[in-house]
Picture 1 (cartoon, rainbow, N blue to C red):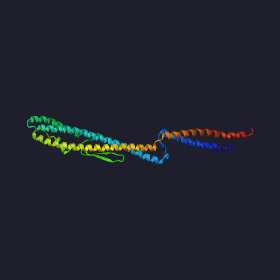
Picture 2: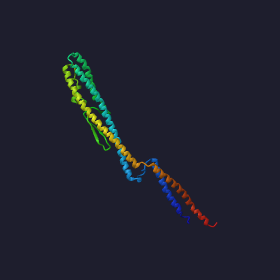
Picture 3: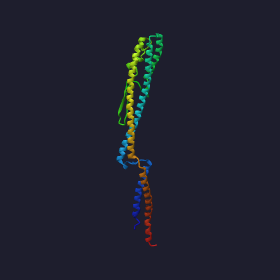
Picture 4: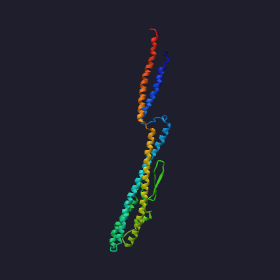
Amino acid sequence: MTIGSNLAAQSASNDLTRTSAALTKSLAKLSSGSRIVNAFDDAGGLAISMRFDAKLERANAAKDNVSNAQSFSNTQDGYLKRVAKTLNRMSELAMLSLDGTKSDADRTLYNNEFVQLKSYITDIASKEFNGVSLFSAANVESVIDSEGTTFQMSGVNLGATSTTYNAVTQSSTSISTTGAATTALNSVRSAITELAADRAKVGANQSRLNMASDYLAATIETFTAATSAIKDVDVATESTEFSKQNILNQSTTAMLAQANQLPQSVLRLLPS
């Protein structure tokens, strides 16, 4: 029995250090909800989860891009529906103007509406979406997945550079005479055919973007689950571990206190 060296207290102190560290670690996991608090907890799992987290961030950003592209295409189609109604009315006016029982004065009245409808199409051709032209020959590019894959939305040109539409909207087009009405009707019919093709392109864009949106939603769901399996703490298991370490910590503290009292027993061996 010695006074200078208390091996029992030293051993109990070492055990207390270990149990305190384990208790702190378990508490950190439960409070953060993460199984990997420090890199040394699972270096491999941490590396994988970081890559998955980055992929998820990219996928969410791509989903926003696709959503904006869908809004762009939906806006395009909304305007094109109005152009279709306008062209249908213009073809109707041209047919009415070709009626041989009407005078040129009557045709002038029809032409007044025809001119206003031309102006309406010209106005739609200048519409923009967040500063980007809705109706130009230029394609609009969008990134549609987490790896940076791009998708080109074909341009729909309603402007003056479009020969087909310009034949309808140019200032010289009118239905004020039967000859002019015949020419205008042919131009309007060609524009209706072109518009059908343009709406088909927009529909194809919408279909592709819808598929991209579904793919991204599945990617986000899958990788979120994978990341959760790697990083998220199992609360039931960790709560059990926390209780175990808490009990060990308390018992070790009590034993250390007892060990520190052992040298006092030497006093019983000394003469009074």
